[in-house]
Every structure is written in structure tokens, then in C-alpha cells.
Length: 480
Ligand code: NAD
Image (cartoon, rainbow, N blue to C red; front, side):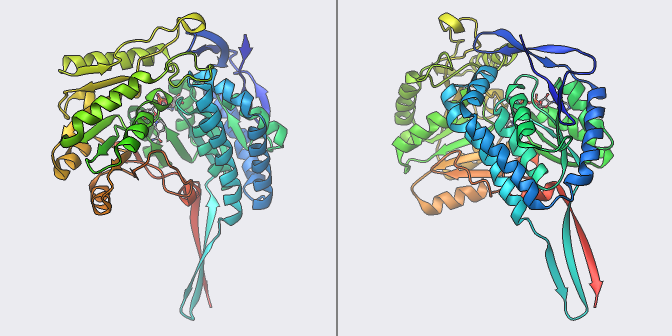
């Protein structure tokens, strides 16, 4: 069985203890590779390698850092087929999505920050004719980057690219559920000539390898993407150590549809925003709020389209909904569907585990599910499900739509559908989310700030925000 390895000090190595964990292919429900079960000793090795590498990487001319990162981006593009297939097998997502979204975006992340390194500059402030101040941005040091399983290489690179571009060295941990593409990525780093120790990848469990990264006194900044509960735990450890923290956490995003929208577009995009990647995207719109005058029409047409979605073997070309990432996660999602029914919800379509014949007969598939008739304050409408499950509810006024949208503890993203420009601005201003899409969804410009309000996170990624996170401002004042 294929053995994934850690990447420490430029070398591919096993966990020091020799321990490993089974890595499951969720579409077949069986282990297909082994992943190192690393602990604090492996993290210690990685930190020491990163510390040593920081001495040269942090002062290397930006052009050189940029060149090696660009080579890595080239190699991702060269190996897109192999990486996409690996991502699909490891996560359960469809191969077509990995080919069109995950892997191209991983290459874009690296390339975006490879060029960003060339343009990141100091500021100067002239204080009359008395002084000149210049503000340097110095890399913070060895940083920890911890990423989740839903968009494995995409989110892994989204964190490490700005850290490396800014001159930091990194100890990173991918999710133990989806370690494969980070492993393949480490081989590309070796091939591209990334100096040893600049990036270190330590695999293993969150509570063990992950916690050791958070606790390590020589790791000065932590960039984390994952669940809100984990984020709070990380903050509880890191805050008393006065570490810099960037937390990208969960969501329960509203998708607000007004009667004056382009209904066809709203339905087509809502299918995507509900079920893309099996609904396992933090930005998915899991609460669809529809103005009452078009509620029945929307619901009927939406459910008709949902029923057409093809669920099945993620490696097959025309499949739109693949497997959920793990058995535990599938059971959590099915548990929420049961809860919804107990709360009075009506299942309009789906609602069950999907049985696929052949290779995937033991896989973790759930039918795309639409639920109505729930109070917006019930648990189903307040807690993150993170699967192919959406609720649909009517509203009567702008005020009510905004109140429903803002009723959860989360504030990551929201989508608004209306052809009325004034209304679009008015609602965007009132919805408490870090990201608002109007008449579109998941339309991304990597320069824009990315992150959530309330329990959806702390800080922003993207553009200069990420480069600033991985650097400290140092002001030098020269008296003339
Ligand atoms: P998770 O919190 O269980 O795990 C995320 C990562 O943290 C994994 O690598 C895990 O091993 C690690 N981890 C767990 N406990 C840890 C600890 N004590 N110390 C250090 N590391 C630890 O999340 P998940 O289930 O992998 O991902 C799903 C969640 O991620 C959802 O809530 C989703 O909304 C969120 N998410 C948010 C964004 C965003 O940008 N806001 C993007 C994607 C996913």
C-alpha cells in the first residue's frame, strides 16, 4: 500500500515513531494508502529545519523566491491530471471539479504570490522637513499553516504561498483525511529546488501533530482554516502565547433571492452554491431565502433541477456529486437530515444515503437534499451541516430577509439575487458577512480580502492582507 511521507528539511521521511494511519478512499470506503501519525518530535525536527532555513530564505532577494515559487506553479500545471485524480480519490470530489477548480486554483495561488513577492514594498512618510520614516515589512519567522480536507491542495497552497512569498518559513499540516496532494506537492518542491527547510509538511492528527504546531514556542504565527470549534481551541492555546492568528472558520451562508431577480440564473447558480463539492465548501449557501411571491415557483423549479443531479463514482466524467469525505462526516450529515425532520422539516428531495453500484457500493454518498417548512431559528438552520443539504424558506420583506440572514452566529459569505441596484447595495450593507456576492457565487479575485465576521473567523486572507499577516511592520524614523 502506498506510504505517504512527511517532508522535513528537504527530505521525504516517515514519522520518527514509525506510526502511521490508514488513509481512506471515501468513494470506496476502504484504506488505499498510509499517512504518517506524527507527533511533537516530528514537529520539533520541522521547526528546527524551518528556523535554520529562515536565516537565508528571509533575506533572499524577492526575485529568487519568486522564481522558485513560479517553477512550483509550472509543475502543478504540468501534473494537473495526476494531481486532480489524486485529489478526487483522496477526498471523494468529482474528478471534473478537481480538474477545473482545485488544481488550477492551487497553481494560481502559488503564481499569484510568486508575483506578489516582486511588488510588495515598503512605505515612506515624510514628516515635514524634520524626519523621514520608512516602514519595512519583515517576515515574522517560522509560521504554522493548518488546512482542512474540503479543498485540500487549494487551501493548503492558499496559506503557504503568501507565507513563503513574504519570506517566512513554514511548518504545515494538511488534514489527516486528505494528505495525498500535499505529499505530491512536496515532491514538486524538491524538483523545483525549494531550499531544504523552507517548507516542512508534518502529517497526522489534529489533536497530536496539529496541537504540537500550535504549542511550539518558536512558531510565531498560525494560519488556520477549519471548523469553528477547532478554531476556538487553537485560539485558547495560541492567544496566551501572544502568537499572531489568522482563523478561517465555518459558515451558514444565506442565499437571498428577491422576486425581481433573473430567476433562471438564480436557480442555476443556486444549484452550484448548494451542491458543488457535495456542499462541502465553507462558502456554500446552505440557507436559501426566497421572497414569498416567487417562493413556490422557485422551489418547484429548483427541486426539479436538484433531482437531475447525477450522484456517483467521482472518477466518471459526467458525475456532478461525489462522495462525502468520511463515514463519520456522512453520518453527521445524515444526522442533521434526521434532526430537520424532528424539527418539523419536510424533505422535498433526497434525504438518504445514496447507494452506488459497482466500485463505489461501500462509498459515503448522500443524496442532494432540499428541506422546507423549518423555523429559521431551529438548529438545522443555525448549525453548519457542510454537506449536500439546503433549506429553503420564504420571506416577506427586506427587513425580514436581513433578520433571517443575520440570525446565525456565523458571518462568512452571503449571496443576493436582485436586478434592483439600490436594493443590492442596501442589502449588502446590512448583511453581516465578510464576503457578499450579488448575482453570482464563488466569483473570486485573489486580490480581494477573504474571511468571515462573527464566529466565521478572525482576520482576512488574500491579496496584501495575507502578505501583511506573515510580516511585521517595522518603522524606522530618521531625523533630518
Ligand atoms: P477541522 O477543524 O476538524 O480540521 C481542520 C484542520 O485542523 C485539520 O488539519 C485538523 O487535523 C486540524 N486540527 C484539528 N484539531 C486541531 C488542534 N487541536 N490543533 C491544531 N490543529 C488541529 O475542520 P475540517 O473538518 O477539516 O474542515 C471543515 C471545516 O472547515 C468546516 O467548518 C468549514 O466551514 C471550514 N472551512 C472554512 C473555510 C474558510 O475559509 N472559512 C474554508 C474551508 C473550510
